[in-house]
Image 1 (cartoon, helix red, strand yellow):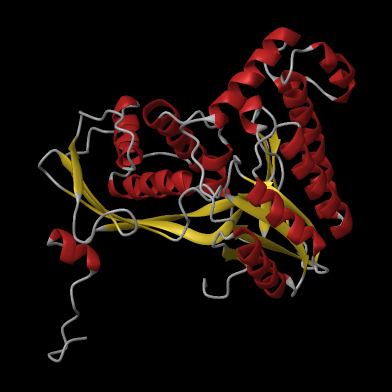
Image 2 (image 1 turned 45 degrees about the vertical axis):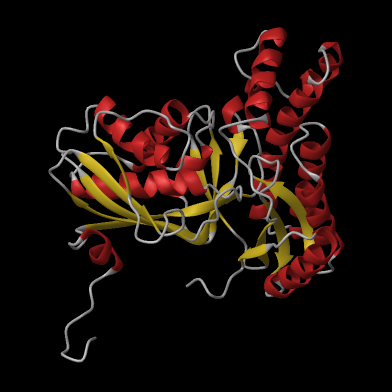
Amino acid sequence: MSAHGARPPSVFAQIFGEPATTLASAPGRVNLIGEHTDYNDGLVLPTAIPQRTTVELCQASDGRVTVYSDELSQSGTTASYVLGDEARTGDWLDYVRGVTWVLRQQGYGSGLSGLKLRISSQVPVGSGLSSSAALLVSLLRALRIALALPLTDVELARLARKAEVELVGAPVGIMDQLACSLCGPGAALFLDTRSLAMQTVPLPASLELVVIHSGVVHSHAVGDYRTRRGECEQAAALLGVRSLRELDGSALPQLSSLPEPLGRRVRHVVTENARVEESVTALGAADGPRLGALFQQSHASMRDDYQVSVPAIDLLVSLGDADPDILGARLTGGGFGGSVVMLARAGCGLAAARRIASRYEAQSGHRPTVLVPDSSIP
């Protein structure tokens, strides 16, 4: 309050000269297990993290979308584009362009005459924790409110994925958007990405999650992530199946007939789907040692068969596995950097995370960030 009792203007009002009328947010997500299976019609097991992306907006009548990002804009500087002129430019504003493009393309843009919006995020970019999906979902949630759009949470996630794949140009599956749209605290989402059948799986009170960002960032829109998806499509064609989800363990002996490295890529997907199902059973039984072993097996498969890990991530995982309070650790997210998820005994996670992060920084030179557990996030 000022000396005269009036509230100071909000950050949004300071930037745009008027107050926001709509606010919405969405969480980042950590995938417990089931990596690189979603675009192969497979099984995944994500859960929400405390960190969220928040969007504030008001409508405008000038036909422009004007955007400020607390994390990515230079202080006080906005970026903008004209509604109807959305085209990929390769910068962070493509995610906003993708949302207005997909709404218009799908027939939901008739009430959209312009926007002023502010984005604020606690989800680190390039962390493997779905910062992009959290932005897309939070913006779509805000526009669902502002424009009174008749969209379910699943429909909203589908639009978010379409925006990211077709305008941003990132060949992602549906897991991230569904997780950010549907996941809540204290439970994981067991999701079949082929049928979109879903089951909520409570997280046992005897176990605790640890998530540490390695400080090595990644991107889904370029590079090896796209290559891995292409390898899976090539392997499926050679094996005569529509997607690798059609294969189970009985197919593993056939894989030696595939050219390298396709057999290893398929083996990861097939065995990872099986590990997801086993993990759901382990969670139901509160079997921490079994779930920890599945984490370790998953990481070895991503490192050796799918080849999406990097030395810094392998170091962080090994430090986690060596800690007495950690039951298992693995790379989470698309790989080539990002974050590690670890399974800890309840009440031990934060102390273990601090020990591991300190050792990792000393040995790698990278600055890690402990995201879960984090007592600073309510």
